[in-house]
Image 1: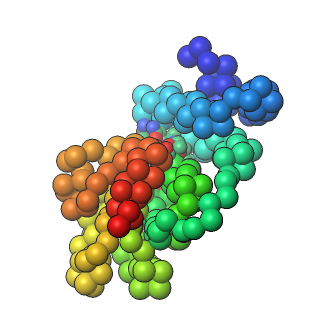
Image 2: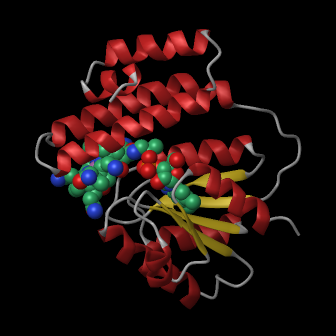
Length: 208
Ligand code: B12
């Protein structure tokens, strides 16, 4: 763990982490690389949690430090795009409250010119369906990091289909655990494990 920012976050030293972030911004480092670095620290924290070296308190603290950093860095990524490229509905699925990654996805989609409706965390199928009826999105994004989220995603997709609302829309799932198997299990059009994939998929789907 050679990067000092990763080390500060994993050590739960938020003052040091913020100091390093501000220094890197002042030195014109790409804001996205600061976020990527902070994300790597959370991956390490997750691994330490899995092996029993860290507890829930560290997961919470790590998440809080990431949020502080994202709040500083996000405004630097904002840009003005005149015309909307399309409407994207997104939310973290039922039984899952992880939203740091989803929030980065929302930010990157907005920066890229999409209108995004973010319905938040722990969202059941009925809330997605209500939002589809009101917002009429071309793309629906389901976010989730927990294994239990896969079942929630599958249920949401099935209920969107049952409500006759799938036709003419694309559905993507995302989170660090997504792969082809999960995509198949859930019945979605594609998956992504980072925010840029969400932008790439949405751009392709909203072209015509
Ligand atoms: C921070 C954290 C928390 C925080 C979350 C704070 C918050 N507001 O989000 C808190 C403390 C609340 C938390 C709680 C729990 N957590 Co937690 N958590 C993490 C941790 C360390 C980091 C996640 C994170 O934010 N990463 C940083 C972001 C930027 O990265 P990201 O999430 O991957 O997001 C990117 C992509 O996934 C993608 N993406 C995300 N959404 C979408 C959507 C679309 C459409 C697309 C295309 C892409 C996309 O783009 C994002 C940006 O690049 C992970 C470890 C890990 N390796 O992920 C564990 C982890 C996810 N948690 C875990 C667990 C077990 C839990 C708890 C059950 C712990 C407990 N005993 O209570 C609870 C569950 C609560 C619940 N019901 O949801 C496990 C999950 C294991 C599993 N297989 O299910 C993990 C993997 C840790 C581990 N290794 O064991 N957690």
